Amino acid sequence: MAEGTIKRLTDKGFGFIDTGTGKDMFFHMSNVEGVRFEDLREGQKVSFTAGEGPKGPRAENVRPI
Image 1 (tube, rainbow, N blue to C red):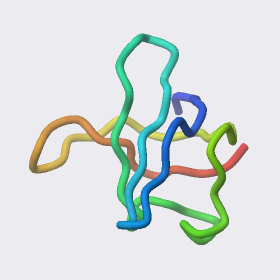
Image 2 (cartoon, helix red, strand yellow):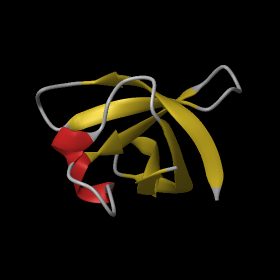
Image 3 (cartoon, rainbow, N blue to C red):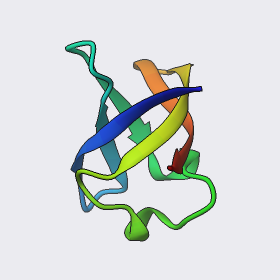
Image 4 (cartoon, rainbow, N blue to C red):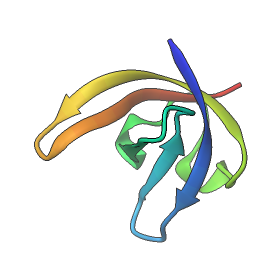
């Protein structure tokens, strides 16, 4: 699993993870595991699996570290 830091969360149920590669990874609240989306915070470290969504790359199996 890859690791990154939550860069931005929205009130619409999605966010972006700073992967450290210069490209942010999109994720949707339906891909969060172990906690509720509302419990995530910007700056929090997470692990995730890179996947493919209908609009391009996305993070799946997002879990706080």
